Amino acid sequence: MAIPLYCFVRGDTLGLVVLAPEGESVDQLAERLSRAAAPRVAPGTELKVVHRGRVLRGELSLKQAGIAPLDRVDLVMEGNTHG
Amino acid sequence: MPLRDEWCDLARKLDWSFSYTNEREVFPPALSGTPWLPSAEWRDWDEPFRSTYAEYVSTQQKKEVAFQAIAEAVGRVEDISQLDPGWLSVVKLHMATLPLAEFAAVIGNLRAARFGRDSAWRMTSLLGALDELRHTQLPLRAMHDLVRWDQQFEWTHRFFHSDDWVAVAGRHLVDELLLGSDAIEFAIGTHFVFETGFTNLQFIGLTAMAKQVGDRLFEQMLQSIQTDEARHAQIGHPVLKKLVARDPERAQRLVDKWFWRSFRFFAVVTGFAMDYLTPLGARRASFKEFVEEWVVDQFQSSLEELGLKRPKYWQEFLDALPIYHHMVYASAYTYRATTWFDFVLPGPAEQAWLLQKYPDTWPQLAPVWHNIEERWRAAGPGLEWYTHGTTPVSFCNLCQLVLCAGTPGQNSAVFVQKPERCYVFCSEPCRELFESEPERYAGHQGVVERILAGQAPANLLELLRYFGLNEANWGRDVVAGSYDFLAAEGRP
Image (cartoon, rainbow over all chains, first blue to last red; front, side):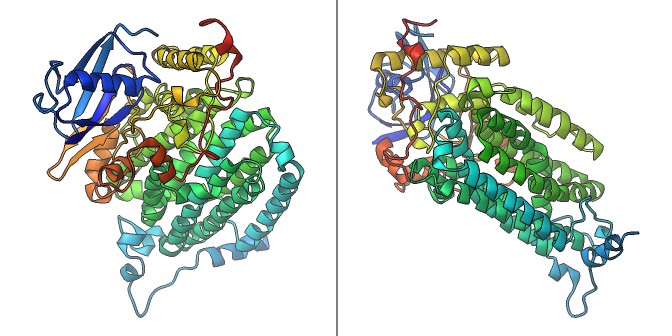
């Protein structure tokens, strides 16, 4: 099942709504968010997903990470190529 | 005493006692507003213009003739098509958001013309309703002939009938302020805060810019409208003065609420125009400078004169002033196909100007524009989609604008979990306003709620159609990315 999430990419100017499969990994979600923000934020080499103040382990599925529908998720990227 | 002054108040101040009903039934609190005071308390209500209907008709007729002459002389396609393309977007943005909002203001004024508590207030509101009808008709008439040349001008009429996200946000504001308010809230929210507090940004600032770019039609239209607004905006002051005397807490709360909501609206509509869409050579001052002059200084002194405090969200307003509209513009640029007007990519000269005007905040925005430039360079002119988002964006459950508050480093979105659902707000003031009147706002279906309920598509291309847009009218870059500075190697 796909769950809607409110997503914010550090360095971006707006919030996004992403529909992500519950079984998707945190790393895959990070890639998805990086692509979604790419028109405004250059991709980074190190991606961290933050949920309720915790950095999530990349291999966990969204369900295992405790991400629920309409939760806020933040993506922090380091090593951006521009800016 | 001139004869006119002898009889004027006989007509203007014509209240009477009711014999077969009572005052509270004639002026129910739900429509007349609270605090509900007996008519004797309102007897001293007055405003400085004291126009009669005959004077009104005579003055307006002259204005109509003058505007018609200007429209015929300089409002043809041949004239408008000579204007700067960025400026044309200012016109399209304003012409869409203005006329049908003004039409809603006809209704708000007519409600006050019936339920305002003093006859002079009702008379002035009746003239205000006629003003707003005129402000509906002028842009519709002036833009109509341009539609055959550029379909984006059709949004002058189409905008408020559409489900475009800007229209959803616009209706949320307009429905509450102009259609859903009682006569007292309307007088304070519309006349005192919106018209007296903020519209000088349009009437002084934008008029000066229109003159600079050579758009005499827009300049004359705004000036003509301004003379009406200056008269009917006077309704707000005496109503607020009475409210301050009888219920200062409510007076302050209404000012707090409508100040914040009006700022959000003007930050987008006027902020875009002043800092991005108007060509650099025609800019007189930045949006922030205009707001500091016309809102921070002048509105603040009006409040002090009435014994009111600064609006509650004053600090949040000051914090947002140098950055909020920049966040929205950068976001909207990369979702430009979701609007009906075109966007300008700020080049090196524009960015230098923005840095000078916003030294503390522009450096936070510059990396975003640098990234957009790099993507234009990579894609080449004409490939709009490489600098365009495809993922749905999120909106505030109060102002219905995109969650663009805060900074690129820290978006200030606030989440509130209620038993029925989770709500999200762009900022603390929007959260607080929502939570102070949840019964007024909770049922509203924003764009995200419509997508999640299956009423609107999540796919961006389909969503554009839902918004009422198509390839012929959706927003683009004004020159499709064909800027000289992009052709240069790297950053200048």
